[in-house]
Image (tube, rainbow, N blue to C red; front, top):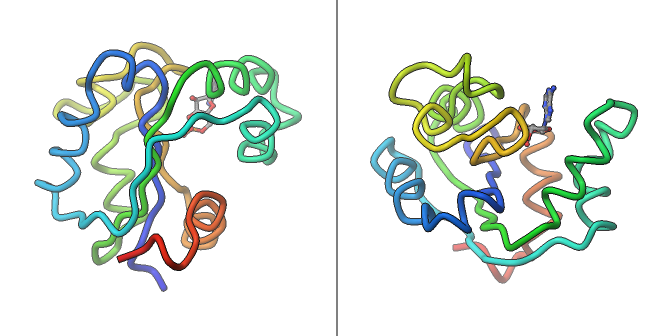
Amino acid sequence: AGNVTFTMIKPDAVQDNHIGGITKMMEEAGFRVVALKKTRLTEERAGQFYEVHKERPFYGDLVKYMSSGPIVAMILEKDNAVLDFRTLIGATNPAQAAEGTIRKIYAKSVEANAVHGSDSDENAQIEGDFFFGADERF
Ligand code: CMP
């Protein structure tokens, strides 16, 4: 279905007490929380999650960063969820993120960019399944 996306609030934003502020922006933009948990990825699990990027020069640092502290994982529901969520969070590099986007407000760098958002319906399913069982979705 094209009506859900997957997001993580990344370690720096969790560390800086922005779980509430970021989630509020998501809810106010019309996203409904289907599933939510605070957890910490091991390096191995972070490496699996970002496997698609394993040939990229930033992969090693990304895996270390994403396992450096707890994250908040969520499945979010809304019409046109994947594309509308990417609009809400803004460009990967916060220097290029539009005014009013989550990354413009909360991101520190291209790596510590506050949130992850799925880039396709297929990846939204894969990434949601990586964190949540059927009994954790409401
Ligand atoms: P995310 O949307 O989670 O997907 C891959 C992540 O890699 C990205 O956000 C950034 O946190 C990180 N990253 C670090 N450097 C780069 C880069 N040069 N280009 C894209 N992503 C990067």
